[in-house]
Length: 152
Image (tube, rainbow, N blue to C red; front, side, top):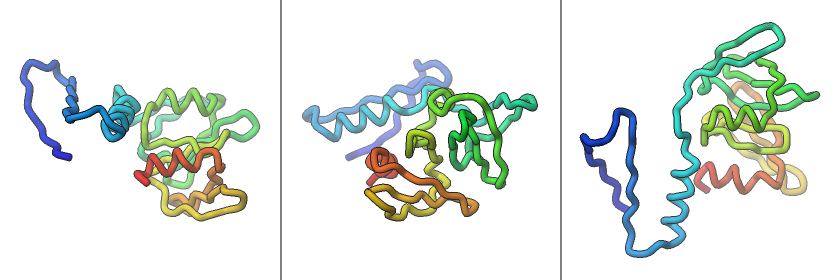
């Protein structure tokens, strides 16, 4: 594969145009198209989260993982703190639209930039070891998607 950059002055500020050229439309081309379509349309580096106490602003890069407990979404941060909100996991993931966040179970998602290790667990599940000695289980149904996000 050959990558190149070409400056195109006719594009609007912030606009990016991607062209994929290949002799045939094979699996690699389809994989690239899929990856590009899942890329966020806008980049959000800070989020305002509504909590029971008010509003909290967090950097997306500081989010280690997300977990749902008793209908509350808990956002675990790199600093060892957590923020609770009534938002659903699906709504939150859609809001940030960031491919670095991968759902790993029905109730959790991880930021792969904070993933330190994956260990085999029981029945095909895995244990995700994260920054700050945090960890969460990866359900066997979600292992394939996590490995794919990691480029495996």
